[in-house]
Length: 194
Image (tube, rainbow, N blue to C red; front, side):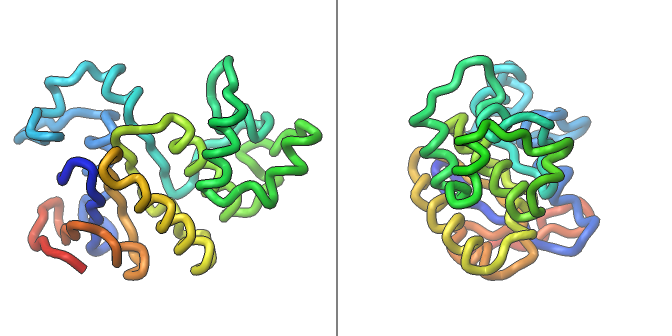
């Protein structure tokens, strides 16, 4: 991985991309071989500390029957400025304003929201933590092209301060990546730029 840069993982379904992201996010350690982040083996980091600095956005984020603020902050204390910045960067403000004003619950699993809105709340949650590593597993697959492009542009603004690793099947999503890795059968078989 290139620290402070964006790396995209592409390849066929079942090629190992999501498994690699789970390892990078600190959910598990490799059973064989080594996985390094910033030239340090992943298992050298204390898992709790590592995960505290990692933002994870799966294709279908886990949302709770609570307010948008609670789903984004995931903590007992809420920094409203930080919340609004995260919602703005994830392009959630337009639909979130009414929910925020009325402290409306979003339903179990976020069922009061569309698939694209749920994904944007997941992205806002990850950005709220100000991660050093942002891991996106098909995190914009339910978004229309314009919204995806806007979010991708905002994520590109993190360059230098945040390392971004993403999986995408749309070529437009990986266009601005600094490095593109092609995975198949659990191996990186090609690397380059878009």
